[in-house]
Amino acid sequence: MESKLKATIVDLIPPALLRFYRKMIMRYGYFGNYANWEEARKDSTGYDVEAILKKVKSSCLEVKSGNAAYERDSVLFNEIQHSWPLLTALLWSASQSDNRLDVIDFGGSLGSSYFQNRKFLKHLENFHWSVIEQKNFVECGKQHFEDAHLRFYYSLDECLAEHKPHVALFSGVIQYLQNPYELLLKIKQKKFRYIIFDRTTFLEHGTDRITVQKVPPEIYPASYPAWFFNKNKFLDFFLSDYEIRAEFEALAGKIYLDEITAYDRGFIFKAKE
Image 1 (spheres, rainbow, N blue to C red):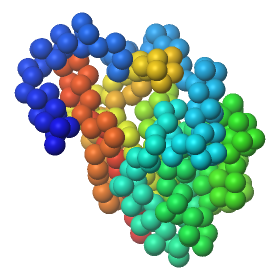
Image 2 (cartoon, one colour; image 1 turned 60 degrees about the vertical axis):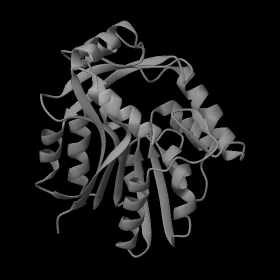
Image 3 (spheres, rainbow, N blue to C red; image 1 turned 45 degrees about the vertical axis):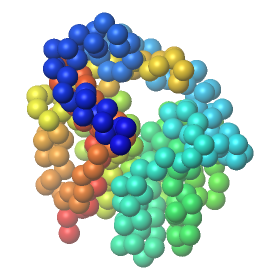
Image 4 (tube, rainbow, N blue to C red; image 1 turned 45 degrees about the horizontal axis):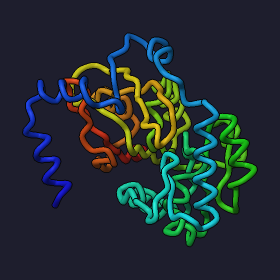
């Protein structure tokens, strides 16, 4: 009830007052409207700073050892905060694939989504989870976190050389790539049967927008470029080859970006027969 009340109050605040509040008080979140990725990169620290890996590794080791239930973006939780639509999508895809689930998790950190969902998935007869990440994350993952189901890879091609995942997962990652549509085109060409997006930032109107996300220092001291995608353009990119099976509200819900209201959303796509 309390969270719903807060959301209602925020919705009643005039846009001009929200812009003033953001400029004068808010120090963290999404900022700017950059002409290109390079300008945003120069105005941020980037995602490949060593401090991020160090913090994420420390938190994930706490989860692995049983001292914490769950980690997301290096933050530890005493209880797992499930994305139920994501879990539903994973189980649904397995149920249509002879109880088989073979996921390729792009930008999956050190296995955050795997550890979040594994207790609901490990009963599957054929269960593989592959993470594609930056070099330093892959090296750390191979050394500390691989198990019977979880593997780490440097590239899509390296992963596909070993086995054939049928689910492509992007959870809070595609908006942080410099050229997202280049990777998405490759994903379409590889003909994954299912593509799942969670925690992805969208605009209802206007063109794609490049911002800089400033992370609160209690998480880790960093900032990096981030896209807000035009929703219709993003969906149209897939509709010749895929059908939308579901759309859902993701973790952040509404995001106030200057005078614009943006949205954190998820989508479940299935390849057309």
